[in-house]
Image 1 (cartoon, rainbow, N blue to C red):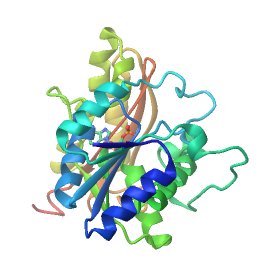
Image 2: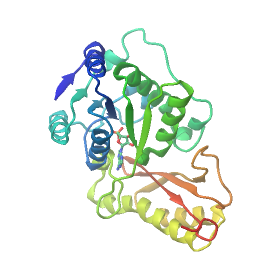
Image 3: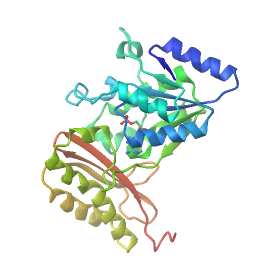
Image 4: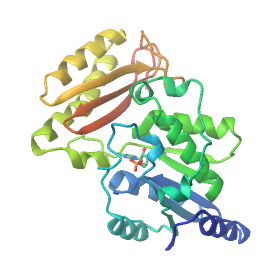
Length: 287
Ligand code: AMP
């Protein structure tokens, strides 16, 4: 497995691969791998003949009071896991490589970032879209794999790929969970033992909502109110948002008369956790 720290050497590897008739899958990450990351790498490995993984804690996607400096890292372990799963290359630039002195270009989208996480993190998706654009330009992947845990991010990248004509096959991967249902996240490392139970309120509330909707509740406000009360019943939780919205546009849906995205962000102790699922009303959309 090759390790690259600068844009030129990473790009040269990609060019050489393409010249040799290989195709490249890219899995962008911020490191501190868990099984969610590894599931993306397995998909990448199957999708194309070569796989590159990037590890970059992107300062541009963190707000001023967020956890950039505290973000967990374990590069040695990450490299071992990536190699074991079959990565051919790891790109791990430092922040000056990506944002050198005098850097001034950013990528923004008009509508999708104005929803869900983008409301309380107003510069986050500008940072995501910018770094993903740069990774696409440097590595020129044929496929790029993203997790649907970050559902809004996945939608934004699909839109970016379309709008800017990257022509990359964007693959969305299912959410990988702990056995008790908690969505895996590098930020789960922040949870203190007494907060771990409260963190389960997210996935459990998704299950409750799915049941309500499957059995006929169609008013979003009723579902949202029910799960708001449920989550607030746990200690250490502070809800950022609970949204039921159109899975494509992310616009609010008042009535669940077609498959809807239920997405939420909840602060649990130091960890800002997100989770989501698709709600289906079985009367309207029989399986
Ligand atoms: P991160 O390192 O948190 O930026 O995540 C890198 C990629 O892994 C993103 O595409 C995430 O959506 C994805 N990812 C993170 N957690 C999970 C999970 N529990 N299941 C599936 N994908 C995930």
